[in-house]
Image (tube, rainbow, N blue to C red; front, top):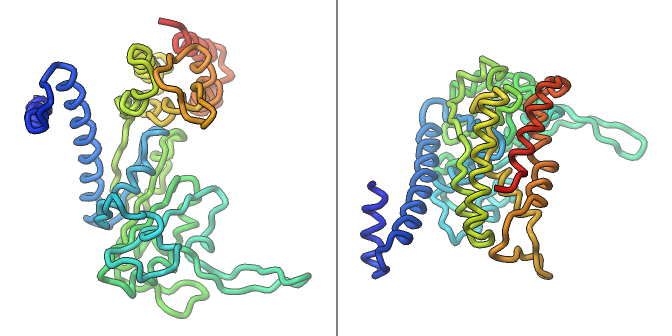
Length: 345
């Protein structure tokens, strides 16, 4: 393969023995890096076209928020040795920290409002008296600052975008999301508001609650969509230093089989598979030394598997299944999956 050829050349330059193990390990590493870099490049390309707004969606635990921040680093050309949050986060306050741009991240929830996002009249308690004052929301502040710094990129991340009532939160922004630089009047504010062309919006969204189907159609056409699926090979990469190789291989097979069973046995489809971040939580239950460091070369036993199932996997699967959890047939299927996941190979 092309990765094997690249690996051969790298080993040759580094004067490392070109045996099967070295070739296989380096090929996997190059493959992983290329896949991740391709995702980031594709999201960046999608984000910088059209409405400059993209939704990254997929099963829980597939790294959507992580990929969002990696896209920010790509667009702002952040170097590895730079303090990413301190230098580039908008809410840190100082707009003279760098010349490239800034990002902000907010997480939507069911109680998130138009006043939080855009602004409006808010009550304020002074002693026993209630007064009302005009407050700017985070997105309005972000866009107003971007308007004054047109030579910089401003990237706004909305984590869990579908958890809020989007039509209510966005309000009249539906128009300016599509028509950048066109001013609109906002209630209570004197100056017209625009979303400038140097503002980019990234939303992340789980599909566990069929959120893509119910996503407001008027908003859907204003966003590009990029799907992230589980990358289970990350499990081996991350845990290889602390888990015995044979034990890790068996654990990887269990994770892979569980996702296949979710697709076929539970009949939920591939969009309801479990992301790698959930399976990596096994490290929470591994044996640690007095410094809270994971002891190396451990075996994953039924004890750790059962903890992972009870605290992380089962609640997610029950959420997937919704009201069907009362169905005895579904309960039996879930119990069957549990036994399969916990059994010793």
